[in-house]
Image 1 (cartoon, rainbow, N blue to C red):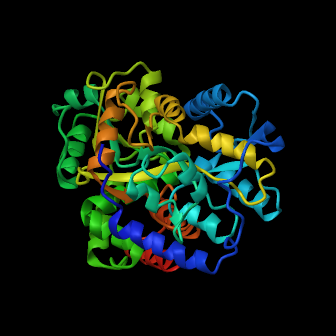
Image 2 (tube, rainbow, N blue to C red; image 1 turned 90 degrees about the vertical axis):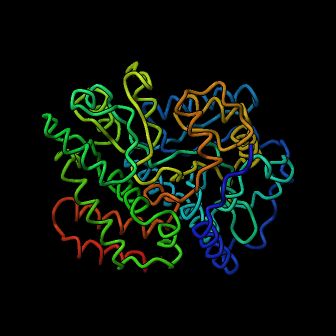
Length: 432
């Protein structure tokens, strides 16, 4: 399989910024870790994630089972932290790292989120491990860009998720006189369908969850209206946040909110997805972790539900990647090495993604064991234009994401106007 197109402007920009930060950061001059070999500290590995419940916990458990088969003498200490779509785990992790109490490895999103840890000198260079295990050819260049700072690789990717996916209930669409197989080419055409659904009696045809999911919806609207290059330019400074194109996108975002459920701020993704599964709504925009929810409800693709890229984003893959690191000061670095070997392995990536609804980060994994949606996503990953997700820490630093999330919450709750929202996003972007 050929490597996917690079994350062009966004990836180059993130890598360049990260390189500049690392050049003057405390991570320089540390011992390389690729020479780590099994030793007395390989008896355990403490793993920090936010996969603490539901299908995510089940997926982690499958990975731990595979790890135990590959490394039976190493005990996994599951230090998962629940809450806030990962924010609780990240907050606790930051406290631990600041106190010099690093775990053996922790989950981090590729891109800007990972770069923050590199900038703080909190993760170690894994380039020698990549070279030793021959991993460079296993992952596409666009993904490697998001793991690289100052020419060095700082994390091993486990899986890939796509954020710009619409999940649709076929029966609800058919009852409204709509073709369940339609892939809407533009947001305008989608608005027409949403109007038809409302006219048929579906009061909130778009099911939406809490703030992070609203930020995710916002980024997909920006991709749709601006196009991939201009969307990437938002993160590299070549597209103005206060420009007319963004104003238009924010208006479309505001219009989508009029079709959404009023109780969205009290729902997490699973509850919002369940409304589509139960036929209370026609659509939800959710990452492909939603696949597991449909599976658990015994819903079949093509029969009960259908998926398609957010209108206007066909041919674009809104990317986030879960990765694992070797923290500075990890007490069991050889245990970490063992964990990273399993994370990077074909078997580890296959068993995990089959359980989680994601796809492997490796592009040499056979598609046969995966569901139809995942096989389509695996193909799209190597053919579509890749762009970085805002909501999931890939496009912008944590502080920028936090400020944009606050601005989004203020707007979606009616506290600010479109002009005020755009101004707040512009100010937040300047903080990068």
